[in-house]
Amino acid sequence: MPDDFHYLSLDEVARRLKARKLSSVEATQAMLDRIAKLDPKLKSYATVTPERALADAKRCDAETAAGKSHGPLHGVPIAVKDLCDTEGVPTAAGMAIRRDHVPAKDATVVTRLKQAGAVILGKLQMTEGAYGLHHPSVDPPINPFNTAYWTGVSSSGSGVATAAGLCFASLGSDTGGSIRFPSTMNGLSGLKPTWGRVSRAGVFPLAESLDHVGPMCRSALDSAIVLGVIAGADPADPTAAPQPVPDYAGAIGGGVKGKRIGMPKNLIGADADCQRALDGASAVLQRQGAQLIDVMLPDLDEATVQWLAQCGVEAALAHEATFPSRRAEYGAEFAALLDLGRGLSGLELSRMQRTRARVTGELERLLASIDLLLLPAMAVAAPSLAAMKARTPQTIASRLRYTAPIDMSGHPTLTLPGGVTADGVPAGFQIVGRSFDEAGILAAGHAFQQVTDWHTRRPAL
Image (cartoon, rainbow, N blue to C red; front, side, top):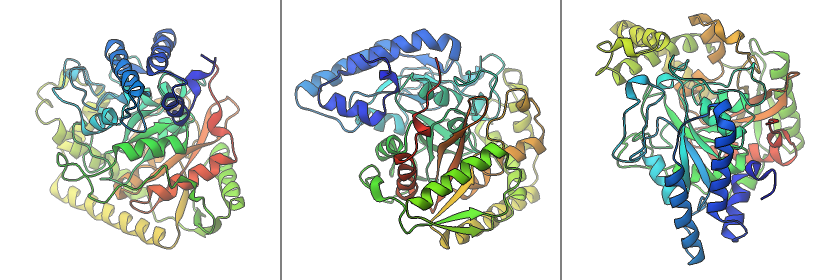
């Protein structure tokens, strides 16, 4: 087994497995050994399931030997965020109140991963209820690039495990930025699909009209492969879109030649590292044949501030059976969000819906005039843990400016690494596309990664 085996792309591992140059048992055991060695420090997993994973790997190898393959993930070890139900395995969603919850069936996304042949290594740690902080009883995951820096939330374990070579891909969820934040902090290619592109059946909600489930991987190609597996209509989720699922991986070589890419002229608060990542991305994509077009973003501040209340009221509904009746089992920050949601008036709810409709319409109109939009993933490219201790509605809103409005509008985005700070922490950017144009943003991301190496940089572990 080569020394850097754990950092191979999902695509490469799948090809080696298919060619029988590698067995699923070898790949799975190597991952389990690395988890046992590194995760006591990194704390990315909530639950590891070694016996189940090895049994699944053995079955995959037997099927490969018999000439049978379940699909593009056959035998590949991956992991999922701990809000995706897994039959017979605890699914706590980062919450003390749910630590003993053992689902009787898999979430649709987990079923689809298994049907495609994936070997599930375990469940990845996350913030309480997929909101902003880890429950006080949980040791937060550690940034593998620099321990003094944030890991991103709420898919913190997904970001750390994938970056540190503790799985070959993972699933995360994004309600206000929770695929994009940990993807940029951990140097990953994270895809927030169009709302409804991926079923949420069996995924514990934070705010159902804002929640998106998507892949967190080491390349745009790997994200395309995983999205192709988990996307599509689902009878168990009436909000899952009925549109056919394209061959994302097959179309990923489409490039950006002739594509109109919007470059916002009115960014607010972007620091030097963030701006360098954006400028570098735009220059590369222009050399690849894209046309850069100056655009003005709509006013996002009102929507960003109101996202907090929108999230709060939907979260309060999701927790109605246990909050406030079991308040003592909740962390203070999450409890405050639920209190906020429960206290809103009908007028306030109507005002939020009006703002959301305005921002969605304005983003739709902007994207109708271009093909893709470049945005920061975070205005401050790499916040430190010390900086993240300042948590007021105003500081939260400033961090969500370029992510939360895209959850409200439901458009797809791909976050990619595009630089590194002086302290060795990745800096990223996001490509936003029209609704259901995941193929377009993935092709743009792949074109960028064909001529850059930011996505190949690994933490020194």
